[in-house]
Length: 296
Image (cartoon, rainbow, N blue to C red; front, side, top):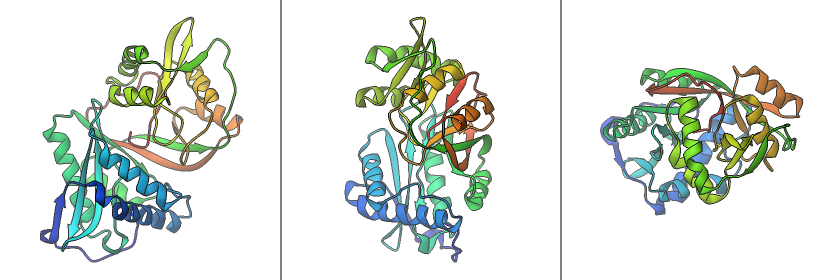
């Protein structure tokens, strides 16, 4: 996803296939190079700080049975990849990356068409993604494909806040909390993210917040790849305040939630970039406090 201009590629030369574990090193290199190039062009920090992180991320996605993968080859050479998360009621796109040598030459459009066709064929009522606001070409591509802009986001990074909110108790999420979490997510968004929540509970990264003995919010983790939903900003603040670290580029917070953003500023977090949540299909205006992941 860089902005380097290249000549269009004849679509007949592009062959799509599923990713296999042996692709991880090549796909990781392309992903790292692609994201680094566009970030460097606009003087932003890298989404993948190291090549090893990119390889590890894509390797885990290839191995995940709830993630659909697609690789593009040109004349037998890998040119890029895309992924579709299918663990929840709504599908989520990304990361998509194309070899900088062939970017802006129909490969990205072909990879996006593949995951959108997959989402439709699997019966998902909606598909979403989060786009880096500084990357105008990807914004144009997604809008041409039918995506609508839903929410401006800020990415916040800094030292863990480590504060407690009176009346809010945060603890590790347990398997029995999943039903309450699903109900809360459905209340806020109109759908659940049950697959992600279950995985986060199993991995030990999920936290819940309680008020008066009742679960009022949860976070699958704290960072780029995790989401949170809650009844109020107090609940989200309690969850953020209990986080031991902020992983990856940072927390994603809806810019329109000025109260929460200002609270984060007051506790030392800073904006590293702005992003855009986009969707096709089912989308309900959230009716509570929430934070998306980089996938949506």
